[in-house]
Figure 1: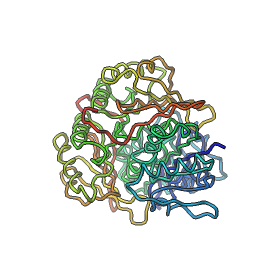
Figure 2: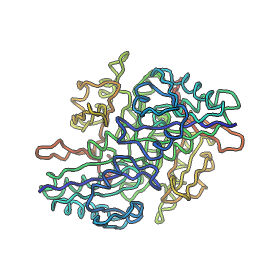
Figure 3: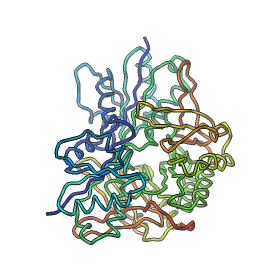
Figure 4: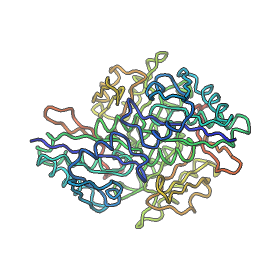
Length: 254
Length: 254
């Protein structure tokens, strides 16, 4: 009997961003694994076992779910946002890559979700309308020196930059440091969007500038988008400004 | 009476990637605008007007929908994938930015969708598991020289690279040229994923290498993901290999 492992993206926040494919996969699963708060977003169902685990236990969670699936069950790991973006899908594949040969025979399916960058961008307007990149500011998994190199490369080449994991409890300085590096390439007036808990009832979206962004409170649930030289604001009477990056760039100096 | 303009991401392919929010917005709209093939994905509904237009008419489509909404209607523009990624949302905001003052008073809502990069990545494994960027290879809207600069910057800084619009009828050479530039930075064995029409019945996903990618047929419906030095293959008996980029990077030389 061959098992099935699904890695399901829930999108950010409540169920408004859930896709039809992900909803169907949640129905199919006999057991759910995931970080506790993500599991809590999924309605309980009789006969569907739940295995919550802590945020820092991605490797152990992936292995537990793979062992379970290898016994012949239909098992799902749920992930906030998209499981392929700084999330569980890579952890699962790394576990298969380094684990028992039998895990390679499992039926593995990954269901994409709306990643935080897309949800925050939509709330703010269209800041990702032109070439962009996504960088995690967490130096748990890579040297800070590499993060700095990527920030410099991205800003000098004119990418809009989405910053995941902008700060953590252990490292509250990352975002301000990154903003300082980007300010070496971009004008202080460059639009910056901070989106927190987008899709949840306590959602907040702040539009600010690169000059002010280092002083804005951010936490692990915040996603930051730093514009390029092309990114513009559309002021609106009585409503928050919209932010967009035009699709066209005329000159190569951008 | 103040109108409402919604820009709705359908996700790629059929309705499996539609989010609950997007489905609700499609119900709410009194009129739909969009590129003909995207409109055809939306089930017809009595009393909901449809205004298809051609692929190259983004600016005119945005203005027509805004004029309609300014008359007090609930109008939606539908977009394949995510409307904020090389798609309609930036065109709409640019039209508001440069259009009549009254358009700034409209209620504008953008509903994110699964962009092709996330769907192709999910089908292949988790190639976007680490820092990544998205570049459109179309030089309709920017100089080719700028595209080259961004390819060089992204590859030398170790980003995984998603290429949108890899070729067009008028410019069939872009992908091979881009692959040649990336080959100056990355080993020939670097994994490359080509996903075509993902989410549709004629979907195809090809896993190849950077050395071979320039010779693979691609078209406007293809999304290409070029790995980094860290990106790995997981071979599987009787199944297509999985591709992933580990979340952790040990050394700064990556």
